[in-house]
Length: 234
Image 1 (cartoon, one colour):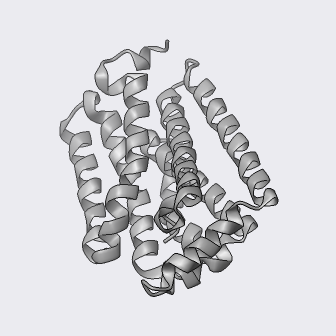
Image 2 (cartoon, rainbow, N blue to C red):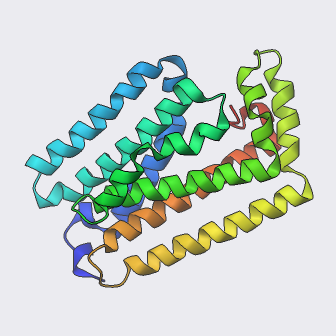
């Protein structure tokens, strides 16, 4: 195992994978309802995440450097999610461009001490791109604006109709292909992490974030199968 993975709990491979995965799941349970009811405060929380990252980096020493970088990366994903779901949720074509708001900074960050956060952000963005493409190819994106704008009485029926599009044979085939591609990419990232490279931790975080995105989308798919009104389509 590379030496950069043997410096203690905060740099342990399992620890990095755990926190990267947890910080992908967090928006599903915290950000989504928060931004729905109070988008401004949710959006401002971006600066709390960013501030915590910079404070840890400045005063936490090397021990906290990876955690600090990860928080900075999370802040970029959090900001994009808040902007889209808070004000632009009726326009699915804007989802990926808004989520990519920190893309230039992330590319620059790959060559700096913030590469773990940059890798997390870019991996989450890649996962969002896969999700949006599948929504487009399966026809779900076409129904998205109507579902978002529907009243409480109309939403269940629209969700049922939208979920049915996911269970057509061609949709299932496309979803399976996308899932296999994501797994292959994530495994390649993990393999890069396990060789002696300076960016090993960053690859490990990227792999965990991408795989967690797949698991979350898979959970939504299964939920849509069982009960479309709880599927997360809104």
